[in-house]
Image (tube, rainbow, N blue to C red):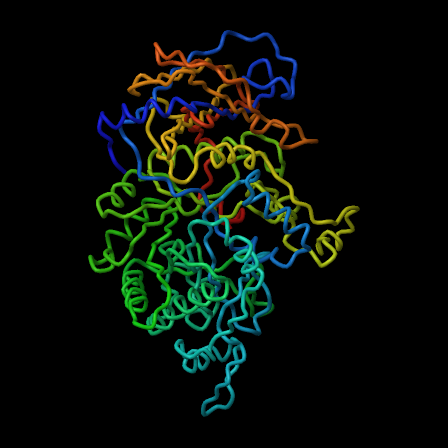
Length: 599
């Protein structure tokens, strides 16, 4: 994060104006109220009051570090879909990573822990990511052959050798690795992370957490084995898939009480539901970081990955963990990761990263900002909610990357079970070789086929990911509902603005902070409003007519439409500074997120 000199500001300004443009996000669909193109969907507009004036003044004198981009964890959706029929997989791939889709460039690979071989399946759909340990370990002790069953977990742990290739199954995780293979040419940043150590390294013997969700889950004597396991998997994926991980994170929301295993007394096995997770308090985090650093420093290490941490659930707990670590552990972490399931303390986390001289990622968020209690594809409130989160995160955290938990959710679960609106792309997580959902077949659905569907979040997220790209620099403006970014090559400025009101806004972009404006500079509005149910992307990214910039006054004025459901947002592409919406009315809490499905 740097504050540029005034000379730099003047030099950049002239080139920025050359491609000055804008895009907008909104909930309304009235073409007469938006700067839409002649071919945009039209709707009859009621008699309206005069637009409310709003002036947005970007400030290029302060520029964040170069933005690394937008990303996602692969986790459950990749695990669930990597062996789907080719046409279904391709459609899903294009929606998430394609240039016309979410256009993501960062991927986080989930190193699975894996339950004992005889544990009946109980984790939620897609969440049982393969562990890399060998289930058929050729080992025995005084009591005879050692199995990978739950009852033999301590014997297996004693026999398992992290430095022996025979202790691993290097064919594991084929479905998630299909995605890695397909993404090699598109991803610019790779991160590996783990939610839970393998079952035999945990106190409970289950990867879904301890019987006491606030108690330490990683066995003290297993720390060395755990970090060796992480390194070995990272190196194996690199070797087999031809990628290079930039970072490896040994934690996921570690200092929380989210991760617990509840036993069903009628079966003696865990109750249905849940996901991999482990409580690891800050003191043990400190030990793991130092152990992982030592492991990565060994002469035989082949990966260049460095440590990132600690992917805590919110900035407040992030700060608590950081302040508990020793100076040695802090020095070993090259990148700081935080989630924003809670949003208080963002500036504190930002300042920790700045003081330490380390990049900061907002490395996970998802949620349901719809609030209706039913799954739907069109409610713009859901899209505005995630847009507000992006905007506020970028402004208050100043992260160098912004990463989704997973943009793909289990459609069956969202529609029929939890009835929520997590994710921006949905597909059933139980498709068979014929492309049909096993659960829908069992329900007798008339159409059990697995279809890739999108919702309002898919539309609004793309206003950010299509127009703010890696290498751009986020800059401040005078409007809290606008995200502004200078293009990496200095050719323009992008604004993403949200109009959460019920009426039009006459938006004036004041470019007076720029030194010069190039002749012929224009602002091109690209508007997203609520789409109809029969075509859920119809009103997304609708490009309007370019508006000239008054070079003398250094201003340009355009009109931003209101949203249905009392929210809308407009976005600037190729150069018109806008900001994000700050609607905080539907912010998911972490506890509700767990029930809903983060998941």
